[in-house]
Amino acid sequence: MDRRTYLGTVGITGLTSVAGCLDGTIGGGESGNGSSNSGTSDTILEPPETDLSEASHPSYGDEFPAVSVPDPLTGETISTDQFEDERVMLLTFFYTNCPDGVCPLLIERLRYVQNAAAENGYSDEAALLAMTFDPERDSPEAIRTFGTQRGVDLEAGNFHFLRPDSYETAKQIVADTYGLPLKKEYDHDYDDLEYKFPHLPYIFLVNKRGYLERVYPQGSRMDMTRLANDFETVVNG
Image (cartoon, rainbow, N blue to C red; front, side):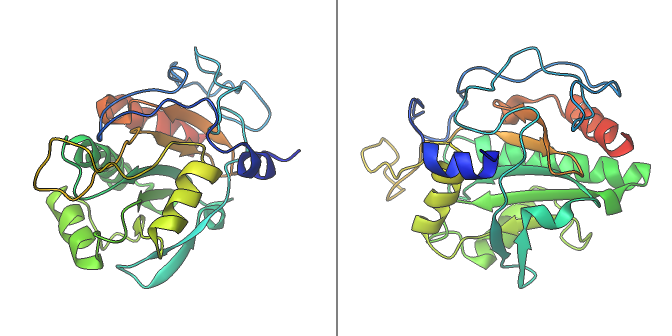
C-alpha cells in the first residue's frame, strides 16, 4: 500500500502526548551523518542510526504525504508535492502562542537554512514550510509578525507559512496525515492562554523526489549547522 494512503488510515495509535509545546520524541530520533552514499535508491543520505519505520509518522525512505494548504501571506495554495523535481523541502508545525519557546526555535532553524541557502547559492532549490495548527488565533497578521521576529526573509520566495482554514483541517493534517498527536488542552497553568497544545517539535527533510531523508523529532534542539549541512547534502545529491 502506498505510504500516503497508509498514513491516512493509521491515525495516531500508540503515540504519546506531550503536554504543552515541549520537546519530545515518538520512538526516538533519526540521526546520523549525511553522506552522498544512498541507503536506498530513493534517498541521498545514508540510513539513520535509529530505525523509525514502524512509527505512525513518515520515516526515512517513505514517500512524503502530500497536502495542500493556503499561504495567507502570499495568497497562494501550497502543495507539498509541487516542489518535486525542483526543491528540497523542510516542513515543521507551530503556533504563535506557544508558551514554551519551542515553536520560535523551530522557525529559527528553518530561517537558518534559508540564510545558508542564500549564502551558498541554492535558494531556488529550497522550500521551507511552517504550518500552524492554530488557525483560529494565528491570523495572517500574527503569522507575519511571528516570522519577522524570527528573522525570516518573507520576500525570498522559498519560505511559506501555511494556515489551514480551520482547526479541524489542521488536526486532520497533523494527526491523520502525518501521525502526530494534536488536541487542545484547556487545563493548564498558563492563565493568559485560553488553551494550548501538546506539540512534538518535528522537522521533516524531504528530497526533490518526494522521499523523506530525515526526521528530526527534537527539531527545536537540532544543531543548526548540522541541519543546514544535511539539507545541502540532499540539494547536491
